[in-house]
Length: 288
Image (cartoon, rainbow, N blue to C red; front, top):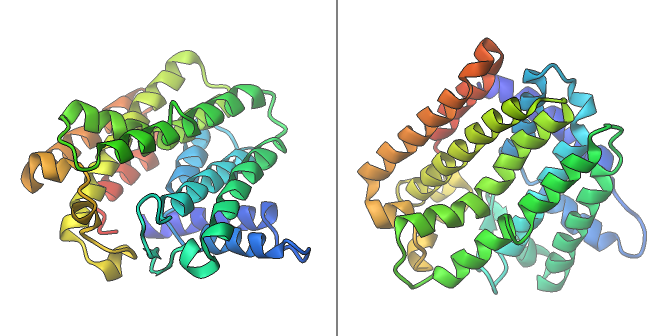
């Protein structure tokens, strides 16, 4: 799986470099800041999910790459803003100083804004006849009914006792929305039918929850060197997590349940979905 992921990451990085080139204008510092975070590493999970969903329906990666890169830009902008002192106040991301530590808060904010705008500029270069439906999904999943909305509820829940349903709601938006849109957009751009789109949506929703639970677990049992960010930050910030509500053992059981449900949603696609099923297992067993 690591070798398979390496091939896909190389394709995504090459495409990102194409859509986000170096700039020598007077405002070049904002491009430096944008590229600093985009090319700082990372799993490239969301674009990989989009590419592989599209491949499952017979589409070529080159016909999907604009939206795959756009989604990664949006994900990266959200990390830049999440790390700011006004939000999570983190100084380490992917093993290097966070964007605002490197470039200052002012440029970090503008770099995030720049990536969001660049994302839609990039997606609009797609030649797909289904571009409008894909754009609608991209905008919805990254907005106030998606990623941003989840972050708002998460921030306002710090230091308060919440139930499991609220926690699931937070992460279905904050983390799960972009994971869902990765698969849904991959299906839309591949001209999948409504049944097929619903199946990949169900897969992605369950995967997103399982992925977040594993993230919560790693914040407790992981180490800074492997994760590339400080561990124990959720406890320090008084955040609600699956581990704080359920404990480690039950969280591990729940992550396994959601991963199994995710794979079950892929059954209609048979062997064509083998990579996505294998990736699910890999993500739930990961150490970073």
